[in-house]
Amino acid sequence: MPEEKKPAPSANKDFFDVMGDFYKNDIGSPLALVAFILLIVVLGFALLMQSNIEFHDAVIGYLVYTTAPYLPAVKTIFTLITMIWISGIIYLFLKTRDLNSIEYHKYKSINTKADEQKENNAQWQNVLDYLSSDNPAEWKIAILEADSMLDEVVKKAGGVGDTLGERLKSIDPEGFNSLNLAWDAHKVRNMIAHDNASYQLTKREAKRVIDLYEIVFKEFQYI
Image (cartoon, rainbow, N blue to C red; front, side):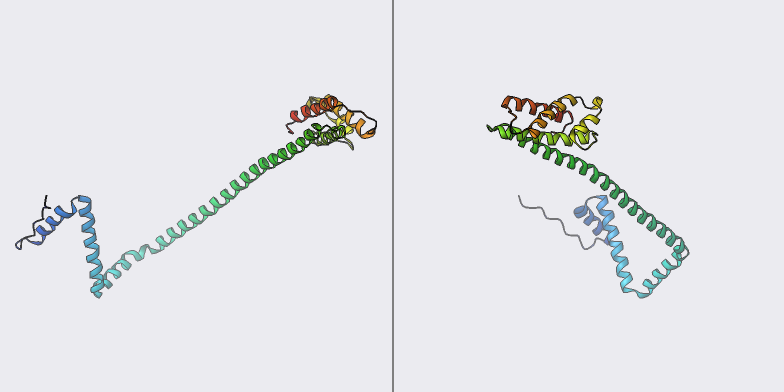
């Protein structure tokens, strides 16, 4: 179907008829009409300002004359707004820094604990690897390694003294449910350390002692 052509404006139409037809055929909405009129006014005013020096000077003079009495107040208001704006930026910066610091220490503590847990688990895995060996000498190494871990647990639990035995004696049993098991395992360690050559350690006994250490470590979430 051929496209319908818009009728050309007749010569006897005046300016308003032409503009009305243009609005009806090409613009179509009241908002677009308002925007179009404002654009025409702004462009006309700009052209007038450029082409007519006297008009330009008159407009500038009028604006200066009418706004001059308010310039000190406007300057004060803008100064206050600027100060408030700068103060707000500084406040937000400080609050952000404080929040970042809190978050940093919070997650640093979490990450540090996670790293320590990872190291403890790795050390405990070494103990289990020694225990799984068929060599009785490595079973003894497993107990010695586990006892070294026990020393760290007792220190963190508040034990004081020069040796692990002294630290175990200083511990309050109320906060150490597996204290007797720790003592039992530590006594076997002492027999290995003081009489290693003659002390006969069976695989079953080694596993029993390692299980005692494990109960202690799990009580304090060390592994």
